[in-house]
Image (cartoon, rainbow, N blue to C red; front, side):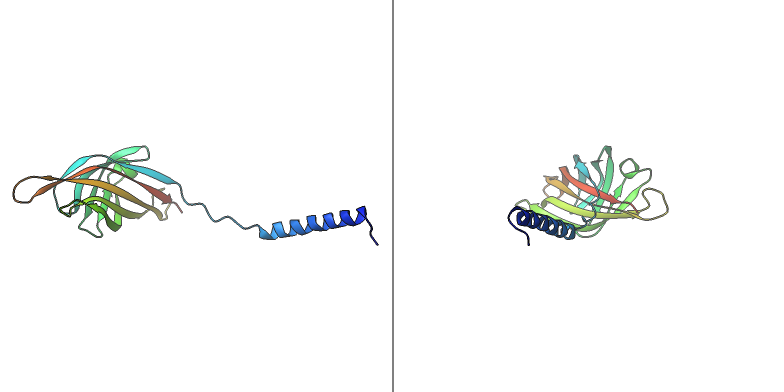
Length: 167
């Protein structure tokens, strides 16, 4: 039989081994990391007379790339056409997957909207399909043009982010 210090050592070794076994079985595999996000900054422009969103040249900076994009959404759906300087060497069309009015002015006109989008294309030109997903929040102002109720839609700024998943 074990006595005194020998018993304490045996208990300490048993507890250590038990701790190692529990620690080893408790380890889990980390989930895959989200793809890195690229920040989007929205500049200012005048979209002309409009209802919802139909603006041909909204200035954007995506990461280090600057250019313009055409936003068209009649209230739900629609597209964003990124010009070549923004998303590579060719025009890139994104499907608008949601269009949310965040705030309105007292006349009911949207003053802030968030557009989410998805692009599926072969961005890295390796013969497969890659995915870009993101959202852009646009701040809007409405400038009266006449007594007939026409307004010029102004984009006064905004921001967003996108992530790219390459296969």
